[in-house]
Length: 111
Length: 114
Image (cartoon, rainbow over all chains, first blue to last red; front, side, top):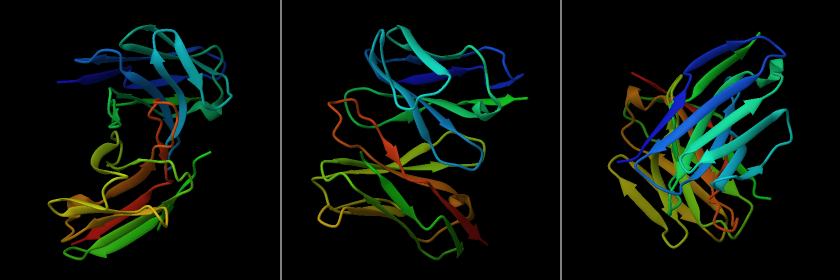
C-alpha cells in the first residue's frame, strides 16, 4: 500500500531564516504531488503541484519554491521566512485516478 | 478559474440528528467531487467522493449527492455521533489537463453534542 511521509513534524524558525520541508511517497510510481498550506483555522491553499521530476507548477506567487529531485520526493523551500509563512504544510499525492491523499503535515511557526 | 463555495461555515447538531453540508462549484467541466474530514491537528482524510456520472453515493452513515445542472453537491451525515465532530471540506476537480488539482471549499466546522 502507499504511504506518504513528511518531515519534520513541527518546526519553529525565526523570521528571515531558510526553510526546507520534505515529502516522500512509498508504494507508487510517477505520482502527482502537491504542497498545500493551511493557516490556523482556515482552509487549504494549493501552493505547488508536480506531475514529474523537475516539473513544478506554482499556484500562488510568494517567497516559497518547490523542487522534485526524484520521482517520489517533493521539497518545499524558502530562502527567507516571513511571519505570514506560519501554518500547517501538507503534502499530497494522486496516482492515475483523482483520489488525493495527504501526508501527516508539518506545523511551522515563524517567530 | 474554478471556485467552490461551502455552507454553512459552522453547524451544531444533537447526537442522532442529521447534518447536511452544501457546496457549489463554478466550472461546469469539473468531474470529481471529494469530501474530506479533518480532526483537530490532523491531516484531512478522504471520507467519500462522487464522480460526475453518478447522482448519489452512500457509505454507511454518509452520503453525497450531485446535481450537475445546478452545479452543487452535498454531504449528508445521518445518526450523527460525537466522533463526527470535525471540519469538513468539499472540493472539485476542474479540467486541468490531467493534473488532478483540487479546489477546496472554505470548510464547515461540525459540532455534535451528546
